[in-house]
Length: 418
Image (cartoon, rainbow, N blue to C red; front, side, top):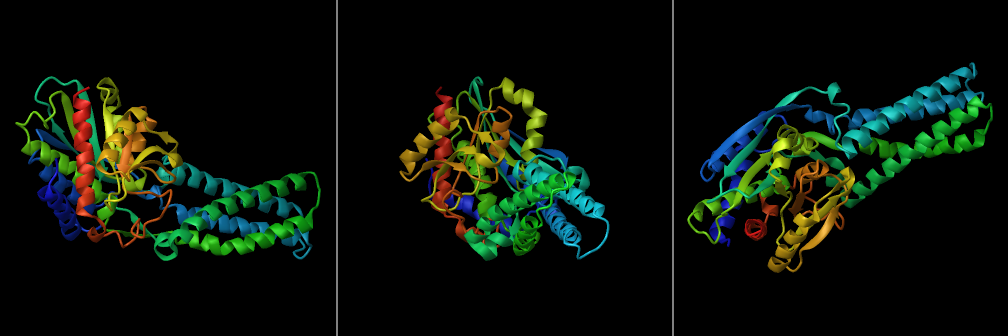
């Protein structure tokens, strides 16, 4: 169904965006310009196209990490000040020891809640603290040759991520440090709560809490790593996720070229091609689209196939769930996709996304049947080009793009015959 010309078309479009626009931070002019180019391309093969503007606070997603980490650091300092009072090294009223602990636990709660709600679960709890920006989702529509019985969205995102220092410099060890950091903050929180409770009942376990204090000092280097977790310089994002965008465009181009061929062009399936903005800012674009169209999505029983992170032809991943945000994809979607993928590439596998999230996850969380597919196997490896400056077109294989395009086209044909 695909050929060299289509593969070259998709790869060349990645290069075009990288050369003409470059990195595309969420909510910036570069993201908007990339969206404009994508819409112009969609106009060549879609019955209609449009852009939907939305407002969000993209920096809220990761921009608060260093502030949250700073609060943990201050909590450790307060903990030690409390210890100095307990040890009579700092001879002031013991009430201050208790006050320092209460302040410390409040700061830890703020920090932990930010990490859980914003960074891990992709909620927008702290967005009000960050500036608002405009972004645009890009949409194209291809109508079937006959009556509409099915509706499908093929989607990806065109913004690119900030570089993750921990991944670039520390590789897989950086991922381990992140997990250790979560554990360390949890221990700090428990120790402070325990100390407050024992202070209320005037029970002194100075040696125990001194031991905790020394552990917290050892933990400080990890805190500093977190402080510089990411830069404010976005990467090129060829792999993540212009690769997905060009497969979406490739679907449109193929259908346009086969509009008079009933073997390939859908008879009863309406096709939406969508390039979301703001995915790297916590799925903001997809979430805004869903909130705007939720009634129509459910009424039309829309299904979603999302593409994210295509690179090597030997890696084909069909995600059944996204553990980080608690999204479970619909087996009625991912199972047929897997069976199709397996015929095209025997190496294809079903696997969860262990951390992070995709736009497909945003749909599944709202009860819209969806699945995400791509070449990102974070369960087994951390590619050196994932959220680093190495995310360049050279890491995207043309054959991989063609492979995913064929999976999507065969899945569309499968849906159209249901």
